[in-house]
Length: 322
Image (tube, rainbow, N blue to C red; front, side, top):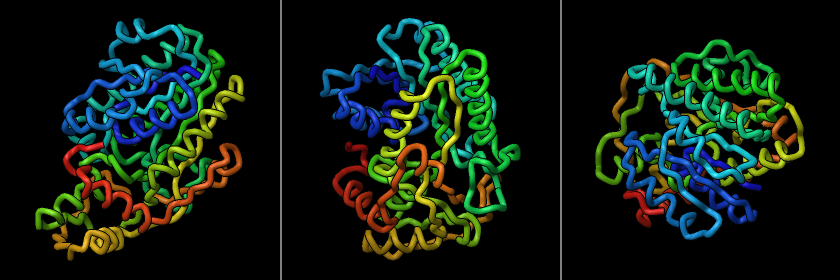
């Protein structure tokens, strides 16, 4: 299998590159190394993949149609993870999020159509569910009430992939990731950010009363789900589907802070702030469909995942080491 992997230098995709290479796949990694967070961290994420002969890195932007035209002919599968990430910044920069996440996705679908590539995996998000009152969140639930521009762009991506399946027979699988954490987690995300603040003795900003809940999903479990997705798109022709990838349990914000503090051996200092626009109160994945069609079987307990993250962080992960 010859894969184009977008966002290759990011948290999830850099791990995925290594998994795909272990499966004897050829990987073309595409990343623009933007400054949403320190590009040096992204460079460090790719150290292991770059040592592999079957990995090639292309520095560029998914919005650049000319760059896509020049990509290698051997590509037969696209795994599209690149995106402008983050709910809160999408509120202040909606045009940028539209441009990257919608136009960029459209460019990749057009690239697939023009090249005759029939396997497309799209990284969506649990944010598409908004403040869904029914739990756990099922793929059959309505997702037409996003509460942030970021969520809206992810839902738009799902709808675009559906149209390309219908019109051009491209098999598309949309994976709704639920709050992924672990080594290499983006520095702006809560667990990594709080670990850094605890280390410096600073207060942790807790938005709301701490009762919000997230379905924290360890990186290795996400990777197992994506590997199942790779097999699914290989075996199915002209089909579109959407699948949740989570741990199917919730952790409250206060509990996350407590466990992280215990594993770091630091008593957290918390500063309570007003709830933020665009933040959902809860995410909680129904993963029965993922179990059924992808063979998905998440293994990681939350505390075990935090221990693995803290080990990485203390070995230099907090400064961008791989």
